[in-house]
Amino acid sequence: MNRFAVVAFAVAGFLLLDQTSGRAAEKVTLIHSVPQLTSLFSFGSSIPIEMGFWKEEGLDVEALPAPGAAAAIQLVVGGRATAAIANPSSEMISVQKGSTIKFYYSAQRGDIFGVGLPEGSGLSALADLKGKSIGVTSFASGGTIYAKGLLSEAGLSENDYTLVEIGVGARAAAALKSNQVQALSMYDEAYAQLAQVGLRMSKIIRDPRAKNYISGSIVVQNEDLQKRRAMLIGLARGLSLIHI
Image (cartoon, rainbow, N blue to C red; front, side):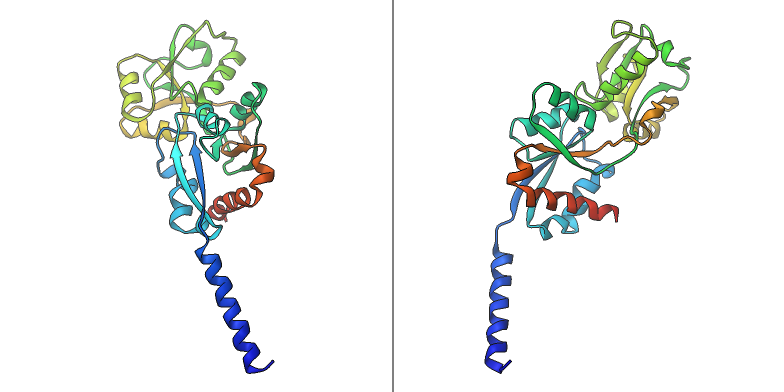
């Protein structure tokens, strides 16, 4: 190859690189199924953004919270968000109601939910919750579905107890201290936050069948699996790099 050909090849390469780098990043709104984006959920928010993983995929991702999985999924269904990280059970319920959505990548595994019985409450089993009020972070949370399932397994109908929406953090702590609720159905970080202020659980009852549960999965519109396939692969790849 002569010197002219080498220079021409180099110039073409620089022009292509400049065109690629100058291309506008594709906007993506990613919703998490929690009311606050804390460090526990940084795998799908601050880390891939700060490390530039999504930028390398040509994506400009904005990660936002939602009260719970049902609320997060509804934003996708309504076209107000590109994708949501939610538990598959909420996605399946949404599909049963006619939504055209799918989850295509699991970002988290393991059972994060459980029904918590506070220390000093005298409660020791799910059957003890008959006539009690149980706090949930949100009625749109997977923890609400989880509680209903566990309590049904224990022989309690929905008329035997009351679910109360209490949020997380200080609001949840106040509800427990004031005896507005006598037990909880929350996720692992919410329990850790309460423990930090002295409100510990004597027992957190979980469904043993859920130990290999697929929890945080990316939910999208069916049509985007074809129309925006490259974007969805890039979105998942940015998350997967956190787990390597």
